[in-house]
Length: 615
Ligand code: F6R
Image 1 (cartoon, rainbow, N blue to C red):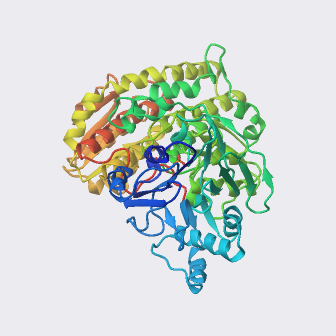
Image 2 (image 1 turned 90 degrees about the horizontal axis):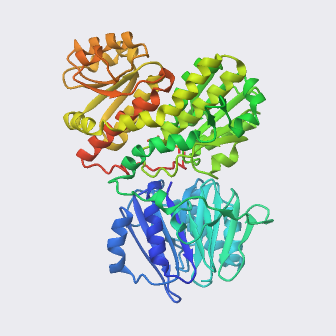
Image 3 (image 1 turned 180 degrees about the vertical axis):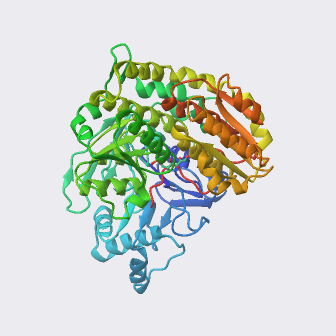
């Protein structure tokens, strides 16, 4: 978490760094700060709150001129969000300044040592310890900044993406990475530094993504030098051409990124299956699977590892893989898997799902699975992300940037890719008949149009949202393929409206949660025509007889649920295995509208961040 931005060149740094921080606010928004160097003075302004708060304050504190600048938007780990704990942090001499995304785990022992040597600390952060360690090494050994950073980093344990500036050497910024992402934009005689490439898209399409344990000195008028932090060996810079466009990262007329991303789903799903789903040829083509088919076919089981919404997509995959391809699947929270000594063998295939490709727990779980000999397949949205690079093979979802903190199009595109993989394996294994396979391909191709139709219910969904916006608790129920959708619906509501919500398999209700039901409890029930419909209708009866309010997510033309429910929201008919791609849409919109009606910060809900790069 946390976003870092830097600029060194001939332009004014402030607008570039400020705008960059706004683009990276999805990574954290507890506090923000900027340091600028104007050719003479190093100036710094920082504040608790969002980048917009910094923007209001900075002009009263410092002149914002200068062509070198670094900035930070924070998701607090060490030290509460307040002005002092905000980044950038000065060293004791005031000569050095740092921004940091990550955690220095052994900061307490380093701090003690530094205190013994007379260093003082104004903040509670691990970052202030790191900059003073760098200063200490630099002074004691009379080193240049780059060397001092390298020696200091070899003493720390943890994760970091850092940028360090020394006002006595103002033509360079030193950056380094371990575990947190760091991109360098290469312009004409100028460099950009950022947690991802979005802050410098309009200035350059050339980017270098540092690998773990690499550092670089970006120096004006000089070629960039990248070194391994451990052994000092030089690394050839690999400059990539960015495929991202500016239009993809702006709201484009929508009030919120989340709403834009909900509405982008028809196109995103098409982009996901484009070139892979070949209906006429009766084929699914996916290089990552085609090249590793034997691994999947010989697998004893598939283990899915993920967190949050991606974990919910993994649960949908469990139903789809087992139903279509008859391969046993286990779905694991990455954070649990990594610490519980799981039994993994070389015959296991692990699918790691992550929108950002940076989630620390998922990354650690991948490393563990690899160390035990499993084949690890990554399913990421962010191209070139750490997880995409750490896995043996993989597939991208091609959903385009997801900026709203609440995941929407990532979920449906993950399910789309997972469905393609399951169908492909089912075909090769012969667990699906030819006509059935073809029918699935045809139906999958129709999904974007059906998502569009589901989106047309928006006004009706808004009305339903206005009725239930003041609920204190909500229950979400679903069965089979739609049980994970119930979990996802509840998560969406919790995270952006702060209303407590629980997702349950519909039939589990009578084993406990039914005790919660009274006239104040809205229950969102997914009751599609083909999915254990009669059983779910019975569950609805049970809720009704206890006076619960029922909102049914039903197939177009439904009669039975309509008679029982207080409200229904229709989605088009499709195959049951594909229904999560449709039933999730009204639940996303419901959460969105409720959150807007409650005046919540939809795109940046409290306490959350888009990339969870700490464990
Ligand atoms: C919920 C949400 C989170 C993420 C989770 C995993 O809307 O966004 O639960 O799904 O933090 O993130 P990724 O997929 O980036 O690994």
